[in-house]
Image (tube, rainbow, N blue to C red):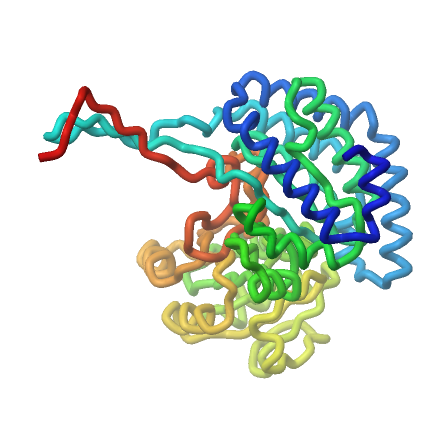
Length: 427
């Protein structure tokens, strides 16, 4: 089915999705056996195509920005949607970084020999076909496509309606890369419609899709988890806490919190709640809150918390809320134990941080919390696969099965056992 036929089938979503699924499944055979060199070539060619076609991508993004304005997206969401040459260069850097990583497929994870004489290896193998559903950020098109290709998986991409044109332009560059390397173009497919019925179909395509990765807000992830019949790697909302222990270094506290909240407010690693030890609430805590206020951050604070003028009294709904905006909740706690208990009650197991010089408090924070990412004296904006050395990420998995934390190429593999004998029989 060529492009013309695909366009004709846009009014028949089940048929369209079935055809996409069949083509993705058919591509997995070539991908599973593709050499590291060919996958590398495809990613480098895709990176070159993104740069060569950057004017087209920016033009397509302008259409999406206009759509976002008409839709009334918040400034933070508009920031997530926007592409310029610097962000396009970031996409290119991500594609090249993934290209240069070692190929995970075929990696021997463990090997041993049994008394029976069997020689056993556990080796990485692709998952098969991955469906990625994401909102707003068009760069996910490049990240997800690159990581799935690197790990030998076919991918079906479904970007948000607001990033429709940008995602299409970026996807065209990925196809250029596949074509240049002689790999099947159906290895990376983008659903060519905004119709939400396509998402419903994707979630139930058990004959073709091996795993779904949702990347977006609570509404999207909740929908996927409720309705998917395909296994899900959940990228849940980033309800990120920072706890300022009484041993916190004042300058580190100031630097880390300001960066964690204000560098980019619309990403999942942005700090959303600040917990301050009561012994430093009127010193370090006040200084940090004042600096946030000076940066234009709206502070929803516990009534008794000392701070600058203009703080808004917090209500129950402020605890455990992902603002994705220039807003932060703040409260004081008696000690590390209370901070841990509060975080357990309100976080999303995404990323949480402690600012402290007392190693005993750090050890307790790390041991007693079970977030996918725990940080010490570092901005939570580092909660990103690229910053973890993965080149890029397909999301931050907040569940505990299979993949957790930043999902890079290695996390998009399973494994199989290779068992060798020599006429070996079991007694």
